Structures are given as structure tokens and as C-alpha cells.
Image (spheres, rainbow, N blue to C red):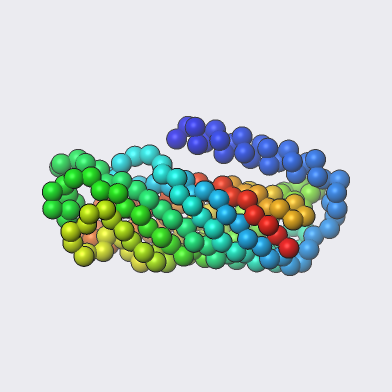
Length: 208
């Protein structure tokens, strides 16, 4: 965890440094509308006592629209495919082991269609660096658990998350880093445990 935090801090410092170097270029100009694509890594884990602690590395890719309706504020809706993976705990006292008929460790992969709707806030005099805040709505497209012997669904089909991050908007390239935390319980088995997605996302893309 500390290495991921250090990586994100370093990335953010570099992002701000690059923005300052580009400050003199087209400083006062902001396109009202942009469209673009981005792709990167989704560093995730599922919080809950049934899961092993630690993060997993997966992918994310998507499209976005950007509406900059003032010199300070804008709205950015997105559509992304995001993969999440996790590993169930091998604690034999765990009541959920019975669902796996043996209690042996299993890996799970979840593919989501996510729709974030983010508020962009320009940071400083440059319009290149944007603070991003807002909700994300996820729909579970596919759930895969290794060697699963029961057809029961383990995860709820919908998820609501909160996102916060930084976005660097260069003339053609965009770079960003975000933190995402799930707000609702995705445990579809019962209400005895609360499971929530948590992720750090780092990406790069193109804007037009």
C-alpha cells in the first residue's frame, strides 16, 4: 500500500510540474468541447473479511466527453470498461467457504461497464490541470470465479462509487490519476458482510 501511495504522489508532482512548464502555451484558452479516449491500469481490491488484503493490477479503457462551460468549471461524462480482480481468503473459519464446497482459495474477475460523471475544476491560472470529483455508476457485465461449483451470483449487478483525482489536459494528450471508493455493498449472498470496491487508476489518452 505504501508503495502505491508513493507512486501516486510522485505521479501527481510530475503532473503538476509538466503543467507548469506548459503554462505559457495557450494559457487563457479553453475549448468548450472535447472528445477523447483513455486507457490505463486499475489497481484494485475488494474490502471485506472474505478477501485477502492487497491490491491487484487490471485494465481500464474508455471514452469521454468534456464540456468546459466556464474558465473554472466543466463537466466530464465517461463510459469505461473496467476489470476488477480479487482473491478469496483461505480462512477455514469463514462461513462463505461452504459456498465453494471445500473452502479452497479462489480467484474472481469482475468486468464492469462504468459511467462516471465528473465535475472538473481548473487548478491555478493554467487550464491544463483539473481537479475531478463526482460519482460513478457501474454495471457488472461478467462475473468469473475459478472452479466455481455453484451457479449462485456472488456480486451485485450495480455499484455506485465516488471518484477524486487530477487530470492533465495537454493540447492532444491527457494524463490522469484517480482514487475510487465503492459506496454500496456489492455482496449478493447475504447481509452478513459488507464488500466494497476500492481502486487507484492511472491512465493516458488522446483528446480532440
